[in-house]
Amino acid sequence: MRKLPVRWTSFVYDASGYADETRNMVLHLDQEKLQIKLIPAGHRSDTFGILEEDTRQKLDRMVQEKDHPNPVNIVWLPAFYLTRNSEAVANIVRTMFETDRIPAEWVKPCNHMDEIWVPSQFNVETFTQMGVSPEKLFVIHSGVDPDMYFPEVVPTNWENKKGYNFLSVFEWHHRKGWDVLLDAYLTGFSKKDDVALVLKVNLSFTTIEKVQRQMYEHITSRGFKIDNIPDIVLINQYYTSKEMAALYAACDAFVLPSRGEGWGRPYMEAMAVGLPTIGTCWSGQTEFMNDDNSYLISIDGLEHVSRGHVLPGHQWARPSFEHTMALMRQVYENRAQACEKGSRARKEIVESWSWKNAAEKVEQRLNQFL
Image 1 (cartoon, rainbow, N blue to C red):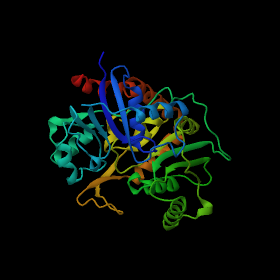
Image 2: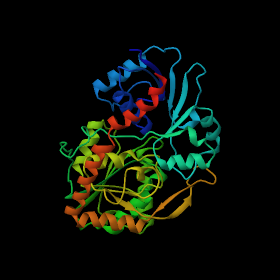
Image 3: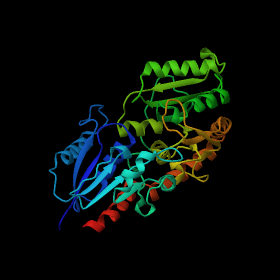
Image 4: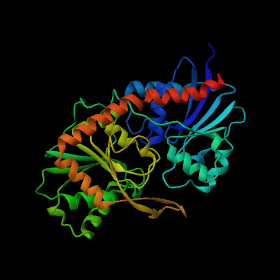
């Protein structure tokens, strides 16, 4: 049977969401039907040490695969990286954006592609309202490996671990709502509580020294004394997927009051492990989060994007600090109820949001070119 040549350009070896999606997607696609040539953007090897050896070898082989004529050209990147391949039988972009619209300069290159894949209905709406052709838009959702992220994973441990541990996983960025999270945690809990907030942060655009300084300045500006606050554990090392699964399993609940997400991968990973998961009721994560399987933070409307972002006119959510605090107290005080919701989340992830399911949708779109 003829294999369909696919030329796939994306981040491959870094810790970004695009890279994680690409790694998992290409490894779950039918290798008997597709001849995938990977073109890495950015890092060209596993410099961060985040890949298991067998995964790295499989990806390396796809990178070393020769280019075939007349491929399907897939660009799995932010749309400002778009390049159309004139020899391709089809040019496809899989991309996303986190605000209430996309950059105006994305519209023309998107419309020059044959198909635009986005992860959620949220982005179907934000792309369409800016002028992207609706007939070219298709939802290709992200996923998670429920055999990697599951409740029985052997948990990691650390010194002076508390009886109840909230976990948050994010790139250190104003969009992620770390300021809202700190305000909610420090107002809702005290040093007397047997509780900790574990922050697993990606420092792609900053340093640990700057993060520590920002945290200190924010905490003290709110009138809290550093020596009289509940525990905060800051982790900034790069982890493999197995190590991340063990970290989720070591904690009791997940919380992230993000201002906007294209998808929201850490929410899905936490839900796969069965953690009661607290997240903002706006943007990409509402594709798979709802009141039955999660704790959704209400928003106080939208606010203009700020803090160094050059995105005039763009807005994102203003997650409620008070509601974030209330939901954190709720899962802390009603643990059996929270665990039941976490179990429902795990069940839904396994049934509907695995990488196997996501790969099947990609194969359905590619079948037309076989």
